[in-house]
Amino acid sequence: MIKTFFSIALRHLVGRRRQTLTTVAGVAVSTMVLITTISLTRGLLDSFVETIIDVAPHITVRGESVDPLPVDLISGKEEKRHAFVEENVEKEEREEVRNYRQVQRILESESYGASVMTVSPYVESQVIVIRGNTNEPVLMKGVEIERENEISGVGNKLTAGDLSVFRKTPNGLLVGRTVAEKLGLRFNDEVSVIPPEGPVRQCKVSGVFFSGVQSVDNSVLASLKFAQIVEGLSDDKVTGIALRVRDPLDNAALARELERVTGYDCRTWQEENANILSLFSRVATIVISLVAFVGIVSGFGVANILVTTVFEKSRDIAVMKSFGFSAGSLVAIFILEGFLVGSAGALAGGVLSIGSINLLASIPVETSQGPLTRTGFSMSWNPLYFVFVIAATVLISTVAATIPSARAARLEPVEVLRDSSL
Image (cartoon, rainbow, N blue to C red):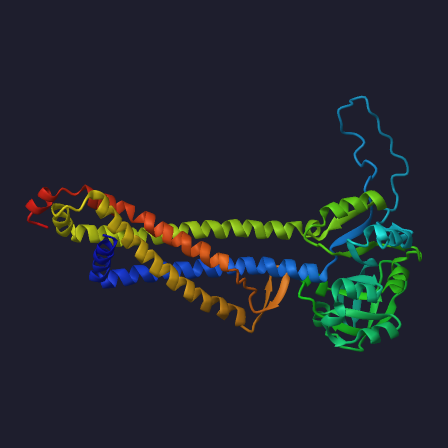
């Protein structure tokens, strides 16, 4: 019986070859677009996470107390509260980790040896870099280069210069590619650095690096000692401490534990990039909605060809019912037709999407994809995307076939055969 159903369904589809091929092509194109879109969206997120984990600290100990003094002393439930302001013009206290070497020893102790891989103190300072008549405000980060290299791998990201040159050069700078392009800097060029306070300092470009993260490539690296001098910090103070941990995807509990031990605010890379990760989440929701709507449109295309088939094959359906085909058998035949059309289109779309993903990934054009800079598009090759979209497309096409199949099942043979217009 199944062989008979398949033969009849195939004959119906082949009998309307042009419409069938058009519908299959529509389903294939929609499937290709959906798989490619999901691959691009997910590929960008995966690339971002992979790059951030590779370049940025997994946990950052910031120079901010976890129990800050209350800022608002007026609002609250107690109406009889009074507030007095004395010497209100004061310099805002900057964030800094005091006695950082003691904190560093705690982080490097055996208690956290299984979790913390690298500890790297740093000092951040907003400076203006001048070369000739061009200037650019940038973030300067003072680091111990060996430790920083273990955090960000900057040594492998140098496009010019060498870490050994940076170590030997007094007031040397490792310049991000974005800064180098804006100021036209090259290896061994001399620049002037204007700090927030203090004299102008002459520095030398000891290297240019490219990480692919725009915020990182728009900064410069200097020695920790030089940054402390520029920022006016004593030898025992830094802006923060960067950590690289063994499990960067499950680091929230460790960050809270370090907050309790050190007394300083500890932020994970997920918290630092919460806005971007939230944006990716919203984009993913939009893509899923797109999958649903385009799949429904494909289903309407399948339903349309089957409705036409029912109309044109009404006499054949009446004859089949006269020969003993039940209403359920007719429903099964047309659902089988929807399944065949959806399967053919979805599988063809899956093959086409392999080509489209390869094409986008191989385009040799540098693009700024959100916070990243990449050559070509970041595409994901997760087989689950293919399975999900193909299965959803086949399911929608099969469900859409129930509309015309129900109409075919309701036809009365006597009325159809009596009507001479059919």
